[in-house]
Image (tube, one colour):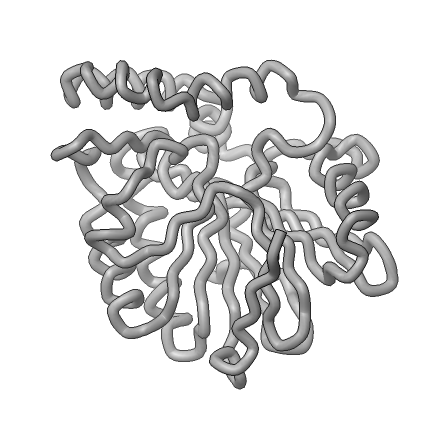
Length: 262
């Protein structure tokens, strides 16, 4: 895995990381509220952002047909395009809920799409970046489903469903999901003890392979975590914009977790 360095253009600027917005659930009103919050956040960080990393599950369901995309998200798309057009790179690490994002977001909005883990270097600090689904030990059931969802033939078959039917099916299951029920009930996501957290164990294993990584940054698991793995390496799980509204900022020297105010 090659590391990509962007040190020069990040001088005196900040790198922002956020994840797991799950727009579209549990209903239009609450999804729109979170979308407006995201748009305001993007507008607020635009002046000092060198790059913005959205680390997955921007939508709870997303599937691109050849000529059709899911309805909605006009405010968000407009703001993302505005930020990207201004010269600020905006990245999306596709998660398990927006795995079927193909080229619309890159061609029409200017976002840079990623699916596999990547190593990036910012101001001499090394970052290991991934959404986090399917990583670490266990979770064999999901890892099987992941292969099914990523299979091009299966994607081709789904594309033959009429968009109204395909979107209706996707949103039906989204509204029945654990995340949708958490939003409805206003509860916090329960996290595992750290020693049982698969991304913690994955990062510890990867640290043996990449001992100079300073930050392992993931989404997916919803509960915010910031934990030292060694004297120079840290695990950061970004939390979500479902109940936590947390994100991370790297100012060139250190990374800190923040919570959306108001």
